[in-house]
Amino acid sequence: MKRYKIDYDEKRDCFAAIKEIPSELIWGDKDFVSNPFFTYTIPAYKRAYLLKETLQSVLNQRPADFEWDIIVVDNEAEAENETEQIIREINHPRILYYRNQENIGVDGNYNRCIELARGKWIAMLHADDLLINDHLRLMGKYIRMHEHDRRPLAYISPQYIEFSDREKITLRRPKQKDGGKDYLTQKLLKEDYRGKLKRFRQIDGAITGYSVGLPSFGTVMNREILLREGGFNEKLGICEDVITPYKLAGKYKVYKTPRAMGYYRFENNESMKKETILKIFASMVDFREYMYSRNLFMRMWGNLARNELNRVLAEYCVQLSRFNERRLKKSDFAGIYAPGRQLWISLKAFQLIMRFYRKVWNLDTFEEECYRLLDSIEEAVQRRKEEKNEFIVYGAGRAGRCTVRYLKKHVPDIHILCIAVSSVTENPGRVQGLPVRSVHKLKKYSKTATVITAVTIQQYQDEMNEILKADGFDNVINLLTEVR
Image 1 (cartoon, helix red, strand yellow):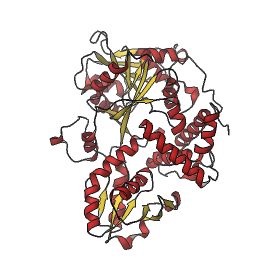
Image 2 (cartoon, helix red, strand yellow):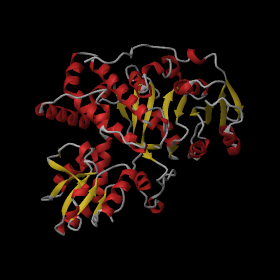
Image 3 (cartoon, one colour):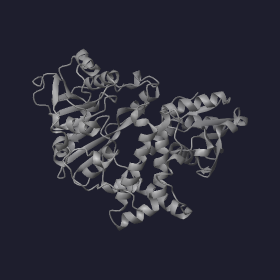
Image 4 (tube, helix red, strand yellow):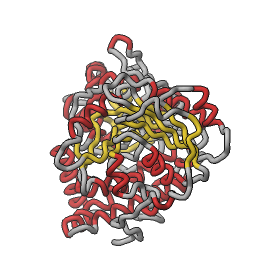
C-alpha cells in the first residue's frame, strides 16, 4: 500500500524561501544579554492575551548559570497591534520583539525564530504554552550532559501536560507541603527530574508509528544543526513539525525528557477544527506508509501493525475534536483509511511485539503514568472490595485497558462487571475480555457498584463525573484526583 505523494527524503533550504521578507526589531536591547547560551523563541500570531501568560512562565524560570534571552517573532504585520502592547506592558529587558513585514506562515515563522535566535540552543514554545519554572535549569543540565557526544545532540522533546482554561495549574514546582490538591499540581509533585533522557531513534518511530512531540512547550533545538538541515519544511505536510525530528534522528541524537516540563493548551482554535484534524490523520497515515517502505523488515511490520496503529491514531484524533461543536467519529476517517479485517492471531502478535519493544526501550510513558496513578488509588479499591462492591471501569481507551490489567494483577478476586462508555457506537464490543456497555444503561448498579473513571485528561474526568452524578452513582474513584 503506497498512498504518500511527498518526497520525505528531500533536503530543502527553507530559510531561502523567506529571506526576502524582513523582520524588524520593534522593542528590546540586544546589549542587555550580549552573548546568550540559550534563547527562548516564541512564534506569535494574535491572541496576545495568552502570550502574556506564556511570557510570564518563561520569565519566572529559576536562576541558571548561563546567559539567556527571549525573542518573540510576530507574524501579524499590522503596526502597533495588541502583541506589541503586551510586550511594552511587560517591559522586561530580556525580551526582544520582532515583527515580520509580511505573514510568512507557521513554518516560515518557526524558521525565522531559528534565524533570529542568538543562543546556540533554542527552546521553542507556542504563544499559548506554559513552562514549569525548572525548565531552563534542567534543560541546561541535559544539554551539558550530551553536547559533546560523538553524535551531535540536535533535539530534546519535553513531555507535556494537556490543559484547558477550565483547569487550574501550578507553574512553580511546589514543595510537598504547599502543593495543593488540584490534579496538575499533584502530578508535578510526583515528577522525578533525576531521570535520564530517553533516546529516540528512527526505528522507534517506525515501530510505534509516532515521532517525538512537535516543537512547542519548551522543545530544545541545536540552532546550528537546524540551519544546516534547512529548518522546518512546509512541503512535508501539516505534520512536518513531528516529521522533522524523525529526520534529524537519522544523523543526530534526539531525546525525550523523562517527565513533563511544560503545558500544552487545548482550546477551540484553528488546529482543532474538523478539516485540520482530518489533515493531521491523513498526514500521519501517509508518513507511516513512508516509514514502512524503508526496507523489507519494515514492509513486513507495516502489514502487521498498520490497521491497529491507524485505529489508535483515529481514537487520538477523535479526542482532538472534543472542543468542536460536533465531535468527530471514527467513521469520519474511513475515507482516508478504512482498515481491513485483521486476524486474531496477527493482532495478538502485534500486541506482544509492541509490549516487548516498549518495555525493552522504556518507551511507554503513558502506561508508566497510568500505573503510578493506579498505585495511588489501590488502597481505596481494596477498601471498596472489602465492602463487597462490584466494580465498573469507566473508559475503554488506553487508560481503561491499563486499569483493567492493573486491577486483575494487584487486586485478587476483584469482580469487574464491565467497561462503561459514554457512546457504545464508537467503541468495540469487548475490552480486555470485558463487555463494553453504555454507562446510561448501568443505573441499576448505581448504589452497589464502584466506578473507576479511567482517563488521564482532567476535562474528560469532569465530564464523566457529571454523567455519573446525573445517573445516581454514589461510589466513584477518580484516577486523576481524590476519591470521593
